Length: 69
Image 1 (tube, helix red, strand yellow):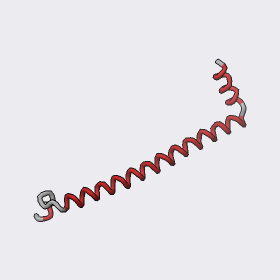
Image 2: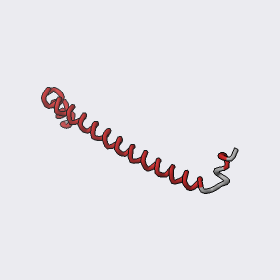
Image 3: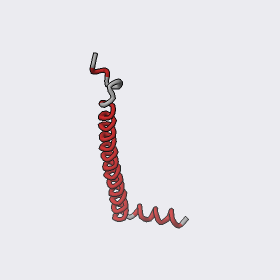
Image 4: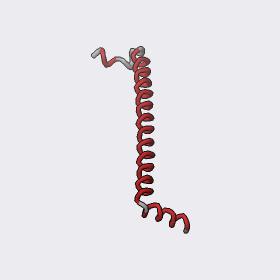
């Protein structure tokens, strides 16, 4: 296969290999950053949803009866 031969040639050349590794690490870092950002956004959404539900349940006295023990 010509594609495999090309990949082998790139890996044998140290300059191109380091460039390839650098681009791979760059992509990995970018995806990690994006996932972290997404995770924090989801965390904030979860916190707002939980606080909203807590506010709603606070106004219902039957669900809030564990304060009256």
